Every structure is written in C-alpha cells, then in structure tokens.
Amino acid sequence: MFSHHKNPEGILHVTIVEARKLKEEDLIGKNDPYVEFWIDSKYKQRTKELSNTNNPVFNQTFTFPLTQGSRDYKLHFQVYDKDVVGSDKIGDVTVDFADIVQQNRPVDDWYKLTGKTGLRSHGELRLAISFVPQQQY
Image 1 (cartoon, rainbow, N blue to C red):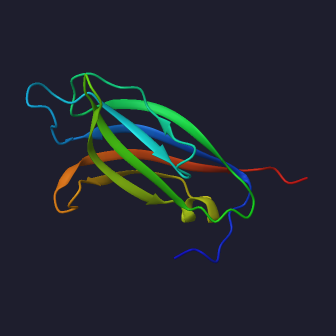
Image 2 (cartoon, one colour):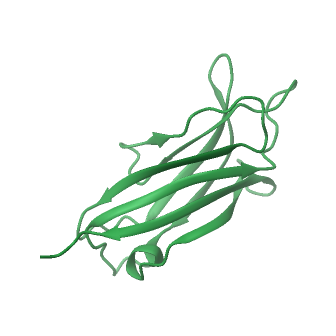
C-alpha cells in the first residue's frame, strides 16, 4: 500500500504498554505472557515474561533504527504463554507504521490479536509507537 514511499533515517520507538483479555492457553491458572516482535525476522526483540495474568502490564520501550530508503513498514507482534517446556502462541497482529514515520504521527492504540484461524479475538495489545527522525545537517 505504501510501497512507493521510503523511510527517512531515524529511530522507531515501540512501547509494549499492556495487553488485556488474553485467551487462556493453560488448563490451570492464567497465562505467563510475553511479546516477541520484529520488523525484520533476523532481529527480534521481546518483553519480559509476566506470571499468572491475562491482563499483563509490560510498559517496556524498544527501539528500531530505520535506515534511509528502507521500505519496511510492518511491525509484527506475537504474544506467547511461557510454559515449563516451550511456549504456546496466544495470538498475533501486524501493524503498518507508514503514517507514523511519513507524517510523524505517534499512536497509542489497542490492536486485536488473532489466532490461527483469525476468526475469534485472542485479546488485545496496547502499543505506543513514535518516530524520531535523524537530524539533518
């Protein structure tokens, strides 16, 4: 959709604020959620795990350097439930951040998580995303 635009150089700030109404993956107790996210799958970042909650408050900020001319405009988020062995995927969402960069318009919003079928809500993820352009001299 925005493929004809190119990113200016700068830093994308992503705050994983919180999640709510996460779909329960455990038979007993609540989830132990964390979020894994990336623009390029070779460079993934993740939040800390929070124990025994379906409404976690993360309040963690991460940065992604954007190079001038990059055409990557998608942030991919996956929410997992940490288990003793491995993790279960709760849901995911992809966010297009072209407007945030092109118009320097920060967002703070809720995004619906979808599961494998994409038919039912698996909860929501609140994200605050902003862009700080590199100073030009």
